[in-house]
Length: 411
Ligand SMILES: [Zn+2]
Image 1 (cartoon, rainbow, N blue to C red):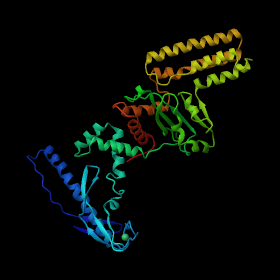
Image 2: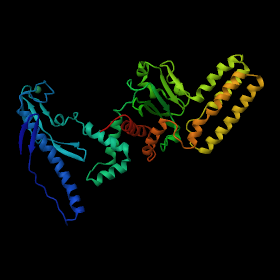
Image 3: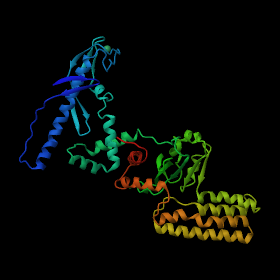
Image 4: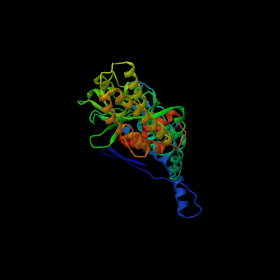
């Protein structure tokens, strides 16, 4: 084995000896033997490269590492090149390496340099580059399938390790608005089919931002109760909201508590036909001379509030149909009342609004895509709908998956 520095690179060449048993020369047998060889080779390869670079480093005046104790980065001697074994994950499988250890000539303390050389944190077993790969993998397909496909390539990575990679990777991903993209987005909490979670009254809430070049990016993600709990979705973005020159336009079909999460904090324009109707109605009622909070006023406003409150996560088509029917009937009654009482501004306002009031929910019923969030939700469902999840487990998988598909995350 020799080391030859080549500019910034060093070239390590080594011979290796290995032994594999084969019963016959069929391709399948050769590939199976190769998979076995790969395992032996990997540990050996890493060990030899480390020693090669270790030797190279030790020959330098200023070392690429410093003594943990005194900060010395020049005077060291080898303690051992084959010290205490340590286990690390080398993406293809776990490997056991013999640690490289040096002695500080200045203060006399001993120090392992294996992880320093690998660019890994002290005592950690999985490097960031590895757990991010595993994390991405686990978010793209099921843990079982990931393990299976890996196995077909001679990999030996178990489901648990992939799962851990997902949790770790997700903990590093945080979504927020991008001040350089458009002040325009959608927030919704609909259409998620996470097994085992819907039943407990939770929904996935997604906040997407429109991009200048078309398409969307994810700016917020959370799993929370049907009503409320939107705060986390916008928490990271409050400052960015304020930084836009134009006021942010938020399109949403979700429940009104989306706005509670933002009011008093940032000013956004919300575009939602259903939501603004009862509020707009207050204005037209005033035009019609109906006294604020009178019996008449309360009747119209409260009826409209009820009519316009759409439960976002009703997934039964027949229920939705019935709901719309009943809401339409109630709306006719309110309009009849306005006609009778001569509330003409209110009546004409409602007549104008009526055709569009239930379109979004009706479209959803017909299976048409109505929003960009809906598209995002489908990306989520392809992964989320195939396992039983804990809340955090689901959120973490979805985080990585969406970061990959929409925000340029890669591993
Ligand atoms: Zn020292």
